[in-house]
Amino acid sequence: MLRELLAVPVVAVMLGVIVGAGLIAPLFWASRFATAEKADFALVATMVSSMGGLIVAGAILFGYRHLAADGFVWFGSSVVGGFVVGLGVAAVVMLRRLAKNSDETRS
Image 1 (tube, helix red, strand yellow):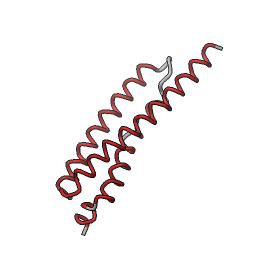
Image 2: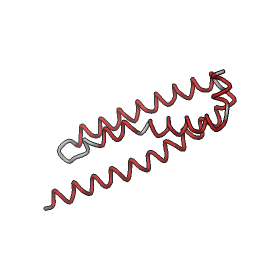
Image 3: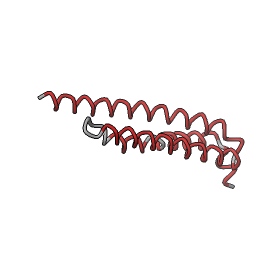
Image 4: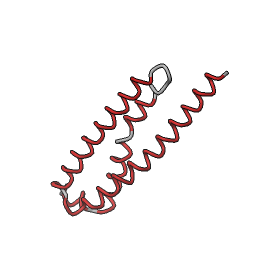
């Protein structure tokens, strides 16, 4: 029953977008540390969260491929799409936060 449900394209796409966007969540956590005083820690936190996200994504894609191969193309494509959209949102949020910090330090 679960295999048939995960093979449905609409379900696979919805799950993929959620998983892809969820993989960006650790970057939001790491972006809190992005200040001039904590630049080294922010870089390490970002690198660790990115690498962890890649490992988790690989495991999820591997599992989905073996669980529901018929819906894998839909799921995999939407994971990438959700990740890219989430990455765009994260970039905008981080740039706004960085600009705000830059303005505060000038004053």
